[in-house]
Image (cartoon, rainbow over all chains, first blue to last red; front, side, top):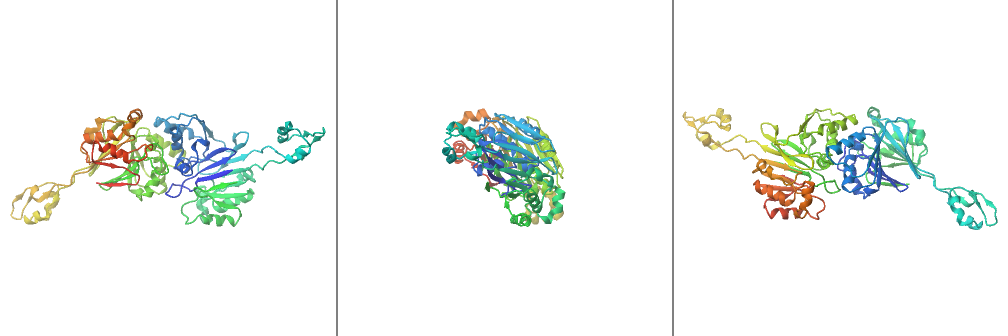
Length: 301
Length: 301
Protein backbone atom coordinates (compact mmCIF):
# COMPACT_ATOMS: atom_id res chain seq x y z
CA UNK A 1 0.00 0.00 0.00
CA UNK A 2 1.51 3.30 -1.08
CA UNK A 3 0.06 6.71 -0.40
CA UNK A 4 1.23 9.79 -2.31
CA UNK A 5 0.18 13.16 -0.96
CA UNK A 6 -0.38 15.55 -3.87
CA UNK A 7 -1.76 18.32 -1.69
CA UNK A 8 -2.60 18.62 1.99
CA UNK A 9 -3.36 22.26 2.75
CA UNK A 10 -6.68 23.89 3.55
CA UNK A 11 -8.52 26.56 1.60
CA UNK A 12 -6.74 28.19 -1.34
CA UNK A 13 -3.93 26.87 -3.53
CA UNK A 14 -0.72 28.88 -3.16
CA UNK A 15 2.65 28.94 -4.82
CA UNK A 16 4.05 26.26 -2.49
CA UNK A 17 1.00 24.58 -0.97
CA UNK A 18 -1.64 22.57 -2.77
CA UNK A 19 -5.22 21.79 -1.78
CA UNK A 20 -6.29 18.24 -0.96
CA UNK A 21 -5.55 15.37 -3.32
CA UNK A 22 -3.84 12.05 -2.79
CA UNK A 23 -3.24 8.80 -4.62
CA UNK A 24 -3.57 5.44 -2.92
CA UNK A 25 -1.95 2.44 -4.59
CA UNK A 26 -3.47 -0.72 -3.21
CA UNK A 27 -3.56 -4.19 -4.76
CA UNK A 28 -2.73 -2.86 -8.22
CA UNK A 29 -5.38 -0.14 -8.03
CA UNK A 30 -4.57 3.54 -8.18
CA UNK A 31 -7.31 5.43 -6.38
CA UNK A 32 -7.42 9.21 -6.52
CA UNK A 33 -8.86 10.74 -3.35
CA UNK A 34 -10.09 14.33 -3.67
CA UNK A 35 -9.03 16.63 -6.46
CA UNK A 36 -8.32 20.26 -5.51
CA UNK A 37 -7.33 22.80 -8.16
CA UNK A 38 -3.98 21.92 -9.70
CA UNK A 39 -4.21 18.18 -9.03
CA UNK A 40 -3.40 17.30 -12.63
CA UNK A 41 -0.20 19.32 -12.43
CA UNK A 42 0.72 17.56 -9.18
CA UNK A 43 0.11 14.18 -10.85
CA UNK A 44 2.54 15.19 -13.58
CA UNK A 45 5.12 16.54 -11.15
CA UNK A 46 5.12 13.28 -9.24
CA UNK A 47 5.14 11.22 -12.45
CA UNK A 48 1.95 9.34 -11.67
CA UNK A 49 0.50 7.69 -14.75
CA UNK A 50 -2.90 9.25 -15.43
CA UNK A 51 -4.03 6.13 -17.26
CA UNK A 52 -3.75 3.98 -14.14
CA UNK A 53 -6.44 5.98 -12.34
CA UNK A 54 -9.90 4.47 -12.88
CA UNK A 55 -11.63 5.49 -9.65
CA UNK A 56 -11.88 8.94 -8.10
CA UNK A 57 -13.34 9.52 -4.65
CA UNK A 58 -14.45 13.05 -3.74
CA UNK A 59 -15.17 13.77 -0.08
CA UNK A 60 -17.24 16.91 -0.51
CA UNK A 61 -17.93 19.73 -2.94
CA UNK A 62 -15.82 22.53 -1.49
CA UNK A 63 -13.43 23.94 -4.04
CA UNK A 64 -10.25 22.88 -2.27
CA UNK A 65 -11.30 19.22 -2.65
CA UNK A 66 -13.01 19.33 -6.00
CA UNK A 67 -12.14 22.22 -8.36
CA UNK A 68 -9.38 20.23 -10.05
CA UNK A 69 -11.82 17.56 -11.22
CA UNK A 70 -13.32 19.28 -14.31
CA UNK A 71 -9.83 19.92 -15.69
CA UNK A 72 -8.63 16.41 -14.93
CA UNK A 73 -11.65 14.86 -16.63
CA UNK A 74 -11.04 17.07 -19.70
CA UNK A 75 -7.36 16.18 -19.75
CA UNK A 76 -8.18 12.45 -19.74
CA UNK A 77 -10.09 13.13 -22.96
CA UNK A 78 -7.19 15.04 -24.53
CA UNK A 79 -4.87 12.17 -23.61
CA UNK A 80 -7.09 9.84 -25.64
CA UNK A 81 -8.41 7.79 -22.73
CA UNK A 82 -10.84 5.05 -23.66
CA UNK A 83 -11.12 3.15 -20.38
CA UNK A 84 -14.11 3.71 -18.08
CA UNK A 85 -13.75 6.24 -15.27
CA UNK A 86 -15.77 6.04 -12.06
CA UNK A 87 -16.32 9.08 -9.88
CA UNK A 88 -17.73 8.74 -6.36
CA UNK A 89 -18.95 11.83 -4.58
CA UNK A 90 -21.85 13.78 -3.12
CA UNK A 91 -25.06 14.24 -5.06
CA UNK A 92 -24.65 17.23 -7.37
CA UNK A 93 -21.23 16.23 -8.66
CA UNK A 94 -22.74 14.77 -11.84
CA UNK A 95 -24.77 17.88 -12.61
CA UNK A 96 -21.74 20.13 -12.05
CA UNK A 97 -19.31 18.19 -14.23
CA UNK A 98 -21.92 17.54 -16.90
CA UNK A 99 -22.77 21.24 -17.14
CA UNK A 100 -19.12 22.23 -17.50
CA UNK A 101 -18.53 19.64 -20.21
CA UNK A 102 -21.72 20.72 -22.00
CA UNK A 103 -20.75 24.41 -21.95
CA UNK A 104 -17.40 23.53 -23.49
CA UNK A 105 -19.01 21.10 -25.94
CA UNK A 106 -16.32 18.75 -24.68
CA UNK A 107 -17.97 15.41 -23.97
CA UNK A 108 -15.58 12.67 -22.94
CA UNK A 109 -14.72 9.98 -25.46
CA UNK A 110 -14.55 7.47 -22.58
CA UNK A 111 -17.36 6.25 -20.37
CA UNK A 112 -17.67 8.43 -17.32
CA UNK A 113 -19.80 7.03 -14.50
CA UNK A 114 -20.91 9.00 -11.49
CA UNK A 115 -21.78 7.24 -8.24
CA UNK A 116 -23.59 9.88 -6.25
CA UNK A 117 -23.75 9.55 -2.49
CA UNK A 118 -26.52 10.75 -0.22
CA UNK A 119 -26.56 8.34 2.73
CA UNK A 120 -25.62 9.41 6.21
CA UNK A 121 -24.77 5.80 7.10
CA UNK A 122 -21.57 4.05 6.07
CA UNK A 123 -22.05 2.27 2.73
CA UNK A 124 -20.03 -0.24 0.74
CA UNK A 125 -19.49 1.63 -2.53
CA UNK A 126 -16.83 -0.42 -4.28
CA UNK A 127 -15.77 -4.04 -4.08
CA UNK A 128 -13.75 -6.49 -6.11
CA UNK A 129 -11.80 -9.66 -5.29
CA UNK A 130 -9.02 -7.80 -3.56
CA UNK A 131 -10.28 -4.49 -2.20
CA UNK A 132 -13.37 -2.89 -0.71
CA UNK A 133 -14.20 0.78 -0.20
CA UNK A 134 -16.75 2.08 2.31
CA UNK A 135 -17.85 5.61 3.10
CA UNK A 136 -17.11 7.14 6.49
CA UNK A 137 -19.87 9.68 7.15
CA UNK A 138 -18.25 12.88 8.40
CA UNK A 139 -19.68 16.10 9.71
CA UNK A 140 -18.69 19.29 7.96
CA UNK A 141 -20.45 22.42 6.75
CA UNK A 142 -21.80 20.47 3.75
CA UNK A 143 -22.43 16.77 3.13
CA UNK A 144 -19.09 15.00 3.43
CA UNK A 145 -17.74 11.44 3.42
CA UNK A 146 -14.40 10.01 4.32
CA UNK A 147 -13.40 6.74 2.67
CA UNK A 148 -12.19 3.46 4.13
CA UNK A 149 -10.04 1.32 1.85
CA UNK A 150 -9.53 -2.29 2.89
CA UNK A 151 -7.57 -5.08 1.33
CA UNK A 152 -9.28 -8.43 1.50
CA UNK A 153 -7.67 -11.40 3.16
CA UNK A 154 -5.43 -13.03 0.55
CA UNK A 155 -4.84 -16.74 -0.06
CA UNK A 156 -3.01 -18.88 2.50
CA UNK A 157 0.68 -19.46 1.78
CA UNK A 158 1.88 -22.92 0.84
CA UNK A 159 4.46 -24.30 3.28
CA UNK A 160 6.75 -25.87 0.66
CA UNK A 161 8.87 -27.83 3.19
CA UNK A 162 5.72 -29.31 4.76
CA UNK A 163 3.99 -30.34 1.51
CA UNK A 164 7.20 -32.00 0.38
CA UNK A 165 7.57 -33.79 3.70
CA UNK A 166 4.04 -35.24 3.33
CA UNK A 167 4.65 -35.99 -0.36
CA UNK A 168 1.50 -34.12 -1.39
CA UNK A 169 0.67 -34.04 -5.09
CA UNK A 170 0.86 -30.63 -6.81
CA UNK A 171 -2.77 -31.00 -7.89
CA UNK A 172 -3.73 -30.17 -4.27
CA UNK A 173 -1.80 -26.87 -4.12
CA UNK A 174 -4.59 -24.61 -5.38
CA UNK A 175 -7.04 -25.99 -2.78
CA UNK A 176 -4.49 -25.78 0.03
CA UNK A 177 -4.10 -22.04 -0.69
CA UNK A 178 -7.88 -21.76 -0.42
CA UNK A 179 -7.73 -23.36 3.07
CA UNK A 180 -8.58 -26.97 2.30
CA UNK A 181 -6.94 -30.12 3.67
CA UNK A 182 -4.92 -32.45 1.41
CA UNK A 183 -3.99 -36.13 1.18
CA UNK A 184 -0.40 -37.31 1.65
CA UNK A 185 1.50 -39.87 -0.46
CA UNK A 186 0.57 -42.48 2.17
CA UNK A 187 -3.17 -41.71 1.84
CA UNK A 188 -3.37 -39.87 5.14
CA UNK A 189 -5.48 -36.60 5.40
CA UNK A 190 -3.22 -33.67 6.32
CA UNK A 191 -4.98 -30.70 7.98
CA UNK A 192 -4.54 -27.40 6.16
CA UNK A 193 -2.80 -25.65 9.06
CA UNK A 194 0.07 -28.17 8.88
CA UNK A 195 0.87 -27.37 5.23
CA UNK A 196 0.10 -23.68 4.91
CA UNK A 197 0.64 -20.45 6.78
CA UNK A 198 -1.63 -17.47 7.35
CA UNK A 199 -1.85 -14.91 4.57
CA UNK A 200 -0.43 -11.46 5.12
CA UNK A 201 -2.62 -9.31 7.34
CA UNK A 202 -4.74 -7.16 4.99
CA UNK A 203 -3.93 -3.47 5.10
CA UNK A 204 -6.45 -0.73 5.58
CA UNK A 205 -6.47 3.04 5.08
CA UNK A 206 -9.01 5.55 6.33
CA UNK A 207 -9.21 9.03 4.80
CA UNK A 208 -11.10 11.52 7.00
CA UNK A 209 -11.29 15.09 5.69
CA UNK A 210 -13.01 17.49 6.30
CA UNK A 211 -14.77 17.01 9.61
CA UNK A 212 -15.49 18.41 12.99
CA UNK A 213 -14.32 16.15 15.85
CA UNK A 214 -16.62 13.15 15.44
CA UNK A 215 -16.02 10.21 17.81
CA UNK A 216 -18.85 8.19 16.25
CA UNK A 217 -16.51 7.30 13.37
CA UNK A 218 -14.25 5.34 15.74
CA UNK A 219 -15.97 1.93 15.38
CA UNK A 220 -15.80 2.25 11.58
CA UNK A 221 -12.07 2.88 11.52
CA UNK A 222 -11.11 0.65 14.46
CA UNK A 223 -7.59 -0.80 14.09
CA UNK A 224 -6.91 0.55 10.63
CA UNK A 225 -3.26 0.58 9.68
CA UNK A 226 -3.26 4.19 8.60
CA UNK A 227 -5.64 6.97 9.45
CA UNK A 228 -5.39 10.28 7.59
CA UNK A 229 -7.32 12.75 9.72
CA UNK A 230 -7.65 16.43 9.04
CA UNK A 231 -6.09 18.83 11.53
CA UNK A 232 -6.89 22.25 10.17
CA UNK A 233 -6.15 23.95 13.49
CA UNK A 234 -4.22 23.65 16.70
CA UNK A 235 -5.95 23.45 20.06
CA UNK A 236 -5.43 27.21 20.50
CA UNK A 237 -8.04 27.67 17.73
CA UNK A 238 -10.44 25.01 19.08
CA UNK A 239 -13.39 27.40 19.03
CA UNK A 240 -12.71 28.26 15.38
CA UNK A 241 -12.50 24.55 14.60
CA UNK A 242 -15.99 24.01 16.01
CA UNK A 243 -17.35 27.05 14.20
CA UNK A 244 -15.96 26.02 10.79
CA UNK A 245 -16.55 22.30 11.45
CA UNK A 246 -12.91 21.34 11.30
CA UNK A 247 -10.67 19.46 13.76
CA UNK A 248 -7.61 20.28 15.80
CA UNK A 249 -4.45 18.16 15.92
CA UNK A 250 -5.41 17.12 19.45
CA UNK A 251 -8.84 15.95 18.32
CA UNK A 252 -7.33 13.98 15.43
CA UNK A 253 -4.99 12.30 17.94
CA UNK A 254 -7.92 11.50 20.23
CA UNK A 255 -9.71 9.76 17.35
CA UNK A 256 -6.52 7.84 16.44
CA UNK A 257 -6.03 6.74 20.04
CA UNK A 258 -9.64 5.60 20.50
CA UNK A 259 -9.58 3.73 17.21
CA UNK A 260 -6.21 2.15 18.11
CA UNK A 261 -4.82 2.77 14.65
CA UNK A 262 -1.22 1.93 13.76
CA UNK A 263 -0.31 5.33 12.32
CA UNK A 264 -1.98 8.71 12.21
CA UNK A 265 -1.21 11.06 9.31
CA UNK A 266 -2.17 14.68 9.83
CA UNK A 267 -3.07 17.08 7.05
CA UNK A 268 -5.37 19.84 5.77
CA UNK A 269 -3.36 22.44 7.65
CA UNK A 270 -4.46 26.02 7.81
CA UNK A 271 -1.70 28.19 6.34
CA UNK A 272 -1.87 30.52 9.36
CA UNK A 273 0.77 28.55 11.24
CA UNK A 274 4.50 29.10 10.83
CA UNK A 275 5.45 25.43 10.93
CA UNK A 276 3.47 22.24 10.47
CA UNK A 277 5.67 20.53 13.07
CA UNK A 278 3.44 22.21 15.66
CA UNK A 279 0.63 19.86 14.60
CA UNK A 280 2.78 16.79 15.22
CA UNK A 281 3.95 18.06 18.60
CA UNK A 282 0.40 18.69 19.72
CA UNK A 283 -0.92 15.33 18.51
CA UNK A 284 1.94 13.42 20.11
CA UNK A 285 0.95 14.64 23.56
CA UNK A 286 -1.91 12.11 23.20
CA UNK A 287 -0.83 9.55 20.60
CA UNK A 288 2.74 8.60 19.68
CA UNK A 289 2.56 7.35 16.09
CA UNK A 290 2.04 10.55 14.18
CA UNK A 291 3.24 11.46 10.70
CA UNK A 292 2.83 14.74 8.86
CA UNK A 293 1.43 14.84 5.36
CA UNK A 294 3.45 17.06 3.04
CA UNK A 295 2.85 17.81 -0.62
CA UNK A 296 4.80 15.25 -2.63
CA UNK A 297 5.53 12.92 0.31
CA UNK A 298 4.90 9.20 -0.06
CA UNK A 299 4.10 6.68 2.65
CA UNK A 300 4.64 2.95 2.18
CA UNK A 301 2.78 0.51 4.41
CA UNK B 1 -0.18 49.90 -20.29
CA UNK B 2 1.35 46.79 -18.81
CA UNK B 3 0.53 43.24 -19.78
CA UNK B 4 1.50 40.28 -17.57
CA UNK B 5 1.23 36.83 -19.11
CA UNK B 6 0.19 34.34 -16.41
CA UNK B 7 -0.23 31.46 -18.83
CA UNK B 8 -0.04 31.14 -22.60
CA UNK B 9 -0.15 27.46 -23.50
CA UNK B 10 -2.93 25.46 -25.11
CA UNK B 11 -4.90 22.56 -23.68
CA UNK B 12 -3.78 21.10 -20.33
CA UNK B 13 -1.81 22.70 -17.50
CA UNK B 14 1.59 21.09 -17.00
CA UNK B 15 4.39 21.40 -14.50
CA UNK B 16 6.04 24.24 -16.40
CA UNK B 17 3.32 25.58 -18.70
CA UNK B 18 0.09 27.26 -17.70
CA UNK B 19 -3.16 27.62 -19.61
CA UNK B 20 -4.39 31.04 -20.74
CA UNK B 21 -4.62 33.95 -18.30
CA UNK B 22 -3.23 37.46 -18.43
CA UNK B 23 -3.50 40.71 -16.54
CA UNK B 24 -3.76 44.04 -18.33
CA UNK B 25 -2.99 47.18 -16.33
CA UNK B 26 -4.45 50.16 -18.10
CA UNK B 27 -5.33 53.60 -16.68
CA UNK B 28 -5.30 52.32 -13.11
CA UNK B 29 -7.47 49.30 -13.94
CA UNK B 30 -6.31 45.75 -13.54
CA UNK B 31 -8.26 43.56 -15.96
CA UNK B 32 -7.97 39.79 -15.81
CA UNK B 33 -8.34 38.16 -19.21
CA UNK B 34 -9.19 34.45 -19.18
CA UNK B 35 -8.64 32.25 -16.17
CA UNK B 36 -7.30 28.75 -16.83
CA UNK B 37 -6.76 26.29 -13.98
CA UNK B 38 -4.06 27.52 -11.62
CA UNK B 39 -4.52 31.23 -12.40
CA UNK B 40 -4.79 32.15 -8.72
CA UNK B 41 -1.43 30.51 -8.03
CA UNK B 42 0.10 32.40 -10.96
CA UNK B 43 -1.33 35.66 -9.56
CA UNK B 44 0.41 34.90 -6.26
CA UNK B 45 3.68 33.90 -7.92
CA UNK B 46 3.79 37.16 -9.81
CA UNK B 47 2.74 39.17 -6.74
CA UNK B 48 -0.32 40.68 -8.36
CA UNK B 49 -2.72 42.10 -5.81
CA UNK B 50 -5.97 40.15 -6.01
CA UNK B 51 -7.89 43.08 -4.59
CA UNK B 52 -7.04 45.30 -7.56
CA UNK B 53 -8.91 43.04 -9.98
CA UNK B 54 -12.55 44.12 -10.40
CA UNK B 55 -13.25 42.96 -13.94
CA UNK B 56 -12.68 39.53 -15.45
CA UNK B 57 -13.11 38.85 -19.17
CA UNK B 58 -13.53 35.22 -20.27
CA UNK B 59 -13.17 34.49 -23.99
CA UNK B 60 -14.92 31.11 -24.07
CA UNK B 61 -15.88 28.20 -21.87
CA UNK B 62 -13.18 25.69 -22.66
CA UNK B 63 -11.39 24.51 -19.55
CA UNK B 64 -8.00 25.97 -20.43
CA UNK B 65 -9.52 29.47 -20.41
CA UNK B 66 -12.03 29.10 -17.62
CA UNK B 67 -11.47 26.31 -15.06
CA UNK B 68 -9.50 28.57 -12.74
CA UNK B 69 -12.45 30.92 -12.29
CA UNK B 70 -14.50 29.01 -9.67
CA UNK B 71 -11.46 28.74 -7.41
CA UNK B 72 -10.50 32.38 -7.88
CA UNK B 73 -14.03 33.54 -7.06
CA UNK B 74 -13.99 31.38 -3.91
CA UNK B 75 -10.58 32.68 -2.90
CA UNK B 76 -11.79 36.29 -3.19
CA UNK B 77 -14.39 35.34 -0.57
CA UNK B 78 -11.80 33.76 1.72
CA UNK B 79 -9.67 36.89 1.39
CA UNK B 80 -12.59 38.92 2.73
CA UNK B 81 -13.32 40.84 -0.46
CA UNK B 82 -16.23 43.28 -0.23
CA UNK B 83 -15.85 45.18 -3.51
CA UNK B 84 -18.03 44.32 -6.49
CA UNK B 85 -16.68 41.90 -9.07
CA UNK B 86 -17.78 41.91 -12.71
CA UNK B 87 -17.38 38.85 -14.90
CA UNK B 88 -17.85 39.09 -18.67
CA UNK B 89 -18.20 35.90 -20.67
CA UNK B 90 -20.36 33.66 -22.82
CA UNK B 91 -23.90 32.78 -21.79
CA UNK B 92 -23.77 29.83 -19.40
CA UNK B 93 -20.96 31.21 -17.26
CA UNK B 94 -23.39 32.42 -14.62
CA UNK B 95 -25.19 29.10 -14.36
CA UNK B 96 -21.88 27.22 -14.06
CA UNK B 97 -20.35 29.39 -11.35
CA UNK B 98 -23.63 29.70 -9.47
CA UNK B 99 -24.09 25.93 -9.41
CA UNK B 100 -20.56 25.35 -8.08
CA UNK B 101 -21.01 27.95 -5.35
CA UNK B 102 -24.41 26.48 -4.44
CA UNK B 103 -23.04 22.93 -4.18
CA UNK B 104 -20.33 24.15 -1.83
CA UNK B 105 -22.80 26.34 0.07
CA UNK B 106 -20.17 29.02 -0.48
CA UNK B 107 -21.94 32.16 -1.64
CA UNK B 108 -19.70 35.16 -2.06
CA UNK B 109 -19.84 37.91 0.55
CA UNK B 110 -19.22 40.46 -2.20
CA UNK B 111 -21.47 41.38 -5.10
CA UNK B 112 -20.71 39.23 -8.10
CA UNK B 113 -22.17 40.42 -11.39
CA UNK B 114 -22.22 38.39 -14.56
CA UNK B 115 -22.40 40.08 -17.95
CA UNK B 116 -23.30 37.28 -20.31
CA UNK B 117 -22.50 37.64 -23.98
CA UNK B 118 -24.43 36.16 -26.89
CA UNK B 119 -23.97 38.60 -29.78
CA UNK B 120 -22.02 37.71 -32.87
CA UNK B 121 -21.40 41.40 -33.56
CA UNK B 122 -18.81 43.51 -31.76
CA UNK B 123 -20.35 45.17 -28.69
CA UNK B 124 -19.22 47.85 -26.28
CA UNK B 125 -19.34 46.01 -22.94
CA UNK B 126 -17.47 48.32 -20.59
CA UNK B 127 -16.84 52.04 -20.56
CA UNK B 128 -15.72 54.68 -18.09
CA UNK B 129 -14.00 58.07 -18.43
CA UNK B 130 -10.67 56.55 -19.33
CA UNK B 131 -11.15 53.14 -20.92
CA UNK B 132 -13.52 51.22 -23.15
CA UNK B 133 -13.77 47.49 -23.81
CA UNK B 134 -15.39 45.93 -26.87
CA UNK B 135 -15.85 42.33 -27.88
CA UNK B 136 -14.07 40.94 -30.94
CA UNK B 137 -16.26 38.11 -32.27
CA UNK B 138 -14.00 35.15 -33.00
CA UNK B 139 -14.65 31.79 -34.59
CA UNK B 140 -13.80 28.72 -32.57
CA UNK B 141 -15.47 25.37 -31.82
CA UNK B 142 -17.75 27.12 -29.32
CA UNK B 143 -18.97 30.72 -28.94
CA UNK B 144 -15.86 32.87 -28.37
CA UNK B 145 -14.99 36.54 -28.07
CA UNK B 146 -11.71 38.35 -28.07
CA UNK B 147 -11.56 41.71 -26.28
CA UNK B 148 -10.39 45.12 -27.43
CA UNK B 149 -9.18 47.46 -24.68
CA UNK B 150 -8.83 51.13 -25.62
CA UNK B 151 -7.66 54.09 -23.63
CA UNK B 152 -9.65 57.24 -24.29
CA UNK B 153 -7.99 60.40 -25.49
CA UNK B 154 -6.73 62.19 -22.38
CA UNK B 155 -6.69 65.93 -21.64
CA UNK B 156 -4.45 68.35 -23.56
CA UNK B 157 -1.18 69.23 -21.86
CA UNK B 158 -0.64 72.76 -20.58
CA UNK B 159 2.38 74.45 -22.19
CA UNK B 160 3.70 76.13 -19.03
CA UNK B 161 6.22 78.35 -20.85
CA UNK B 162 3.49 79.59 -23.21
CA UNK B 163 0.85 80.35 -20.56
CA UNK B 164 3.47 82.28 -18.58
CA UNK B 165 4.53 84.20 -21.67
CA UNK B 166 0.91 85.29 -22.25
CA UNK B 167 0.41 85.97 -18.52
CA UNK B 168 -2.72 83.77 -18.45
CA UNK B 169 -4.53 83.52 -15.11
CA UNK B 170 -4.47 80.07 -13.43
CA UNK B 171 -8.27 80.04 -13.39
CA UNK B 172 -8.13 79.25 -17.14
CA UNK B 173 -5.89 76.16 -16.78
CA UNK B 174 -8.69 73.61 -16.38
CA UNK B 175 -10.45 74.83 -19.53
CA UNK B 176 -7.23 74.99 -21.53
CA UNK B 177 -6.69 71.26 -20.77
CA UNK B 178 -10.21 70.64 -22.09
CA UNK B 179 -9.26 72.36 -25.37
CA UNK B 180 -10.63 75.87 -24.83
CA UNK B 181 -8.98 79.18 -25.66
CA UNK B 182 -7.92 81.62 -22.89
CA UNK B 183 -7.43 85.37 -22.37
CA UNK B 184 -3.98 86.89 -21.85
CA UNK B 185 -3.01 89.54 -19.25
CA UNK B 186 -3.45 92.15 -22.03
CA UNK B 187 -7.04 91.02 -22.73
CA UNK B 188 -6.17 89.29 -25.98
CA UNK B 189 -7.78 85.84 -26.83
CA UNK B 190 -5.09 83.17 -27.13
CA UNK B 191 -6.01 80.12 -29.26
CA UNK B 192 -5.77 76.80 -27.42
CA UNK B 193 -3.14 75.31 -29.71
CA UNK B 194 -0.70 78.08 -28.76
CA UNK B 195 -0.83 77.26 -25.03
CA UNK B 196 -1.31 73.46 -24.96
CA UNK B 197 0.04 70.36 -26.65
CA UNK B 198 -1.68 67.22 -27.87
CA UNK B 199 -2.41 64.54 -25.26
CA UNK B 200 -0.50 61.27 -25.42
CA UNK B 201 -1.84 58.97 -28.14
CA UNK B 202 -4.24 56.56 -26.44
CA UNK B 203 -3.01 52.98 -26.28
CA UNK B 204 -5.01 49.96 -27.37
CA UNK B 205 -4.71 46.21 -26.83
CA UNK B 206 -6.54 43.43 -28.67
CA UNK B 207 -6.73 39.93 -27.20
CA UNK B 208 -7.68 37.28 -29.78
CA UNK B 209 -7.79 33.70 -28.52
CA UNK B 210 -9.01 31.12 -29.51
CA UNK B 211 -9.87 31.46 -33.18
CA UNK B 212 -9.51 30.03 -36.60
CA UNK B 213 -7.91 32.45 -39.11
CA UNK B 214 -10.56 35.16 -39.36
CA UNK B 215 -9.69 38.18 -41.52
CA UNK B 216 -13.06 39.82 -40.78
CA UNK B 217 -11.67 40.96 -37.41
CA UNK B 218 -9.10 43.20 -39.15
CA UNK B 219 -11.24 46.38 -39.31
CA UNK B 220 -12.04 46.02 -35.59
CA UNK B 221 -8.41 45.83 -34.53
CA UNK B 222 -6.98 48.20 -37.17
CA UNK B 223 -3.86 50.04 -35.91
CA UNK B 224 -3.97 48.72 -32.34
CA UNK B 225 -0.71 49.09 -30.46
CA UNK B 226 -0.58 45.50 -29.38
CA UNK B 227 -2.33 42.46 -30.77
CA UNK B 228 -2.19 39.18 -28.87
CA UNK B 229 -3.19 36.54 -31.39
CA UNK B 230 -3.26 32.85 -30.77
CA UNK B 231 -0.85 30.67 -32.72
CA UNK B 232 -1.58 27.16 -31.57
CA UNK B 233 0.17 25.61 -34.54
CA UNK B 234 2.85 26.18 -37.15
CA UNK B 235 2.05 26.22 -40.85
CA UNK B 236 3.10 22.56 -41.06
CA UNK B 237 -0.07 21.76 -39.06
CA UNK B 238 -2.32 24.14 -41.04
CA UNK B 239 -4.89 21.43 -41.72
CA UNK B 240 -5.10 20.60 -38.03
CA UNK B 241 -5.54 24.30 -37.28
CA UNK B 242 -8.57 24.45 -39.57
CA UNK B 243 -10.00 21.24 -38.13
CA UNK B 244 -9.68 22.39 -34.50
CA UNK B 245 -10.48 26.04 -35.35
CA UNK B 246 -7.15 27.40 -34.26
CA UNK B 247 -4.59 29.56 -36.07
CA UNK B 248 -1.02 29.13 -37.22
CA UNK B 249 1.80 31.59 -36.55
CA UNK B 250 1.69 32.55 -40.23
CA UNK B 251 -2.03 33.31 -40.04
CA UNK B 252 -1.57 35.40 -36.88
CA UNK B 253 1.12 37.38 -38.70
CA UNK B 254 -1.16 37.87 -41.71
CA UNK B 255 -3.83 39.36 -39.42
CA UNK B 256 -1.24 41.62 -37.74
CA UNK B 257 0.06 42.80 -41.11
CA UNK B 258 -3.41 43.54 -42.52
CA UNK B 259 -4.42 45.35 -39.34
CA UNK B 260 -1.15 47.32 -39.36
CA UNK B 261 -0.65 46.82 -35.65
CA UNK B 262 2.46 48.05 -33.85
CA UNK B 263 3.36 44.76 -32.18
CA UNK B 264 2.10 41.20 -32.46
CA UNK B 265 2.36 38.92 -29.42
CA UNK B 266 1.98 35.22 -30.13
CA UNK B 267 0.67 32.68 -27.62
CA UNK B 268 -1.56 29.65 -26.96
CA UNK B 269 1.15 27.35 -28.22
CA UNK B 270 0.56 23.66 -28.59
CA UNK B 271 3.07 21.81 -26.41
CA UNK B 272 3.97 19.52 -29.34
CA UNK B 273 6.77 21.82 -30.49
CA UNK B 274 10.28 21.69 -29.11
CA UNK B 275 10.80 25.44 -29.01
CA UNK B 276 8.41 28.36 -29.14
CA UNK B 277 11.01 30.35 -31.09
CA UNK B 278 9.75 28.47 -34.16
CA UNK B 279 6.51 30.47 -33.90
CA UNK B 280 8.39 33.78 -34.00
CA UNK B 281 10.54 32.70 -36.92
CA UNK B 282 7.49 31.67 -38.93
CA UNK B 283 5.53 34.85 -38.14
CA UNK B 284 8.48 37.10 -38.96
CA UNK B 285 8.58 35.82 -42.54
CA UNK B 286 5.45 38.00 -42.98
CA UNK B 287 5.52 40.63 -40.24
CA UNK B 288 8.60 41.97 -38.44
CA UNK B 289 7.34 43.14 -35.04
CA UNK B 290 6.69 39.86 -33.28
CA UNK B 291 7.04 39.05 -29.59
CA UNK B 292 6.53 35.71 -27.87
CA UNK B 293 4.27 35.41 -24.85
CA UNK B 294 5.86 33.40 -22.04
CA UNK B 295 4.42 32.53 -18.66
CA UNK B 296 5.45 35.26 -16.25
CA UNK B 297 6.66 37.70 -18.93
CA UNK B 298 5.52 41.31 -18.80
CA UNK B 299 5.20 43.77 -21.67
CA UNK B 300 5.16 47.54 -21.14
CA UNK B 301 3.68 49.76 -23.80
